[in-house]
Amino acid sequence: MRSERRILTTHVGSLVRPPELRAVLERVYAGQPAPELDAVLERCVADVVRQQAACGIDIVSDGEYGKTYSWSQYVIDRLGGFERRPLPPGAAFTAIRGKDYHDFQAFYDEYERAQGPAGLGKSFGPAQMVVTGPLAYRDAAVRADIARLRKAVSGAGVAGAFLPVVAPASVAPNRKDEYYRSDEDFLFALADELNKEYRAIVDAGFIVQVDDAYMATHYDVIGDYATYRRWAELRVEALNRALRGIPEERSRYHLCWGSWNGPHTNDIELERIADLLLRVRVGGYSIEMANPRHEHEWRVWETVKLPAGRVLLPGVVSHSTNVVEHPALVAERIVRLARLVGRENVIASSDCGFAQGPFGQRVHPSIMWAKLQAIADGAALATRQLFSR
Image (cartoon, rainbow, N blue to C red; front, side, top):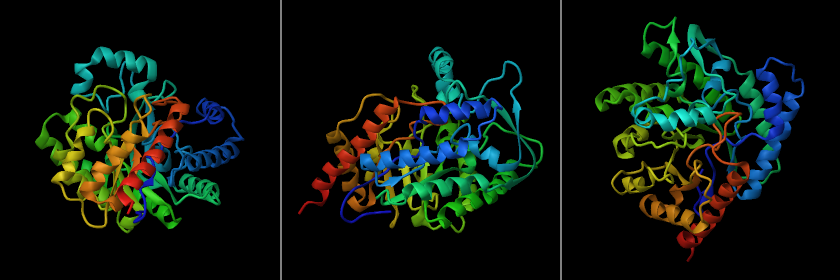
């Protein structure tokens, strides 16, 4: 979506779950009956859409409330052919443990004791994901997500709505494969199944947002740039296969550096992967541009040309600090980018999700809502600067 009249607003999708929903999900994950889950989900999604609209967010989400475990592992429950097994004794969640982790291990030891692996929350149970047979997508859960969101946005007065999904690169990167002969065979089979989820969302009239945290963060794990490029190029190919038949104007791609609020000193620079980003056949690119490790990278767009017909969804507030950005700063971040790529090609957003699963959160909910308000207030200021006669 784009506007010739003003700066539109959105965010990355995952919002902090309300206590009512968390309490029900705790029982579900403990194997206890929770017959009220569907009713609670419907009520909470309706509430979160109303709250986004009240903040001035134009393109809203369901908060990812219908997803289990995390923003990426939810799909394991929607794919036949996967099995979740307990990690062996002493094993750890290793998907993001690279140079940054080892350089700051004392910090990460403390961080994970307080917030769980990757800050996903202490109720998140790391497990070994094992491929045991042919992948087969089951669409009941996404159909339920769609129905709840459709009901919630009806009469909400928003410009549009989106549902986040996972990219092939971010599905169980530390999996054990007991079925497919090669990494490529698995990725392409996965792409074909994920395409069914992507299609269901756009066929329902919503925007599909493809989340891909591991695309950038895996550089820190691999360490060697040439090896990383080969790894990433294969996954871009798989992603474009998953996007077959998806209209570019109904899709957007979210790339981040892993979301957790840690040092990030070994993040790969945007300029080294900008060409990979722009190979993804979508209409919009959602990128972290407000956090202190990457804010300076708005200048990448001084030399990198945004393809015609595509938009940027820059993060203009950070999800990883409790400091609420001043609307004037938000406007400054919007305006300087808009003057490079075109005012109609910028949609103000957040850096990443404010919660990566049901039981983790990056900031307090009250601060999350203040930051979404800051996006809207800053976009209004930027609109006056960019669109006034």
